[in-house]
Length: 418
Ligand code: SF4
Image 1 (cartoon, rainbow, N blue to C red):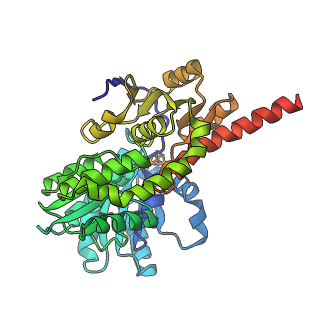
Image 2: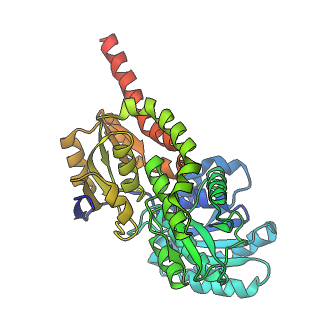
């Protein structure tokens, strides 16, 4: 294990809330609807985050809690009932309706679990209701997916059949490529969670071997373990190194030889190494500061150092599950400084003091930092882009080389005009 320095920090935070995850979850499961039980602020957040969908018939909406609901003067249940009845009458294609809690619904202690239970009885055989929290109180945006998946686990039937279960949302084309590689390795029974249709939930049990595709699913992992699933310990499939180790870990769990894995993925690795070169030229030796937001920071730091030769100043992460991250942490260079949690002002002071070439951060911090002449990359882009797998390594590096290239061009233009 490399000698990594662990630190913790608490204080003011600057992150997106779990409602944001609806943007990628509703694309993944087109037969599901996400009904946010929240305020007008929540409605604005989700509409602007998924703005492109507004012109289509959207698969998310908000039951607005008015001020009188928040003051306890009105029955929020009535408004929720009205919205749900209207929705189901208009949209017969909805098969699963997620009731998504928010800060306001948590503040007034609206019991969405009981609401979901009652609705399940009323609409039995027509629509399934599940609830989870997307609130921004003490959580970050990727935890929305963790909450949604955890809420689906009780609906999954049991089976003792051996299978590989990929857990965490992937872009469909990336998922297809992964499945093809696993089939070539000789693993035939492969399923994904979340599935592409909310009604096609995989069956799970003691012979289900779970391979995580995303590092932010701690709660989901805990409940899958309770159902008897085996969790395969591996780094995450970002970059060539992470993806290779990920395939090797799965192969080991299914008693497939390392040699066979290398035979199948070697051509992909050779292509990816070539494609990475031009990005590495820009990234090499550049100093990187990752502020905590997506929980992907440790995997990104490992990729950007080991494969793109960037220097790591600080690796922030909103939460650190040392068990899920242990294979990643082993791959980090000695003396990497990991900071769990956030005191945004202190972190910004450290950013300014260290004068990095690139900062990975939330959208709210990016503009002020850019105004100070510091190049940034929005961490939320990592969950909206297909970045997983060996073939995607160059695209992943490209997300970081692009802002540096842009600032180089701007600097050279400024030099010419002066
Ligand atoms: S859930 Fe909370 S943090 Fe998220 S938009 Fe609503 S009020 Fe804001």
